[in-house]
Length: 328
Image 1 (spheres, rainbow, N blue to C red):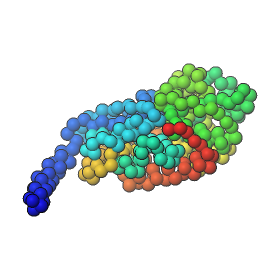
Image 2 (tube, one colour):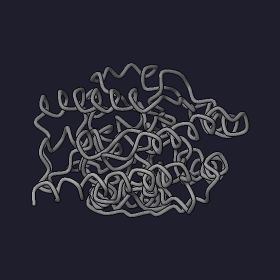
Image 3 (cartoon, rainbow, N blue to C red):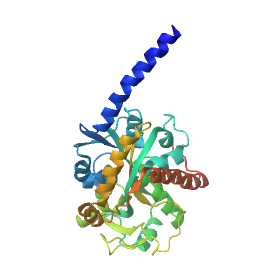
Image 4 (tube, rainbow, N blue to C red):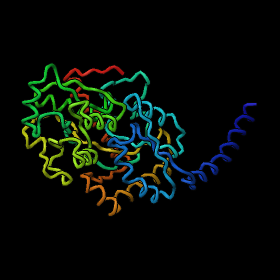
């Protein structure tokens, strides 16, 4: 009986290998779903829609974008992690997946991006802008600091959910400036940006593409950007460094990368990575992104994994030092 079982296993294995190889060889032969963990209108959604058509062309397949917000990103992150590892479900991630891991250490869901994903490649990065509501009587950072000291209690700032980039980056800035504020969570960066435009919260830290659009529409005032140099998209806006604010050693920019469920075959990951590299090297894409101060800085999967590991380590240092705790 044991010999029969072994024989059957060998036969099934031999039969399965050509089928698997054929499936990988024909990839992609149907639309690929790219999942964004936050609602439309936020930094990740805005960025990815700028490149999605070009990426579809490079892949030779149509792309379906699914915005699946909620639980600070965990609904989408867990869904992608639990999806078949066949390359047809891809996560469009921002550094929030690293910040959240630093914030919670062990989330009740058991999710861990280093264990649950394979990294495909880094795509791009962009500074954040300190966007202030028009009903706040401040047009410069100095005026904002003076105003904040007159507010009864604390002023508030909107963010995309606990552990998001727009939640923790303001905490770093506030700590460096010696200010305190009340964080107000929303179901994504889009709703948070809309809230500051409507004057419902005083501040939000938005990606430059989002902040530029709102500033041009006279919906907000951008007081500074977090990049090392002024944004070519908003050259009149100073940098945080110019203002003399000393902050903790963490990444104050958005960065984006692609991830797939753990165990996705290497040939499929290679096709995704190669298509991503071609897209980010496309002159038309680079010109389009540069206009909104987004750096098309492609890096392969192994480099993205290291970047995520460093993100978790650096943010853990700040979060632990400041005893920041948020209920999952």
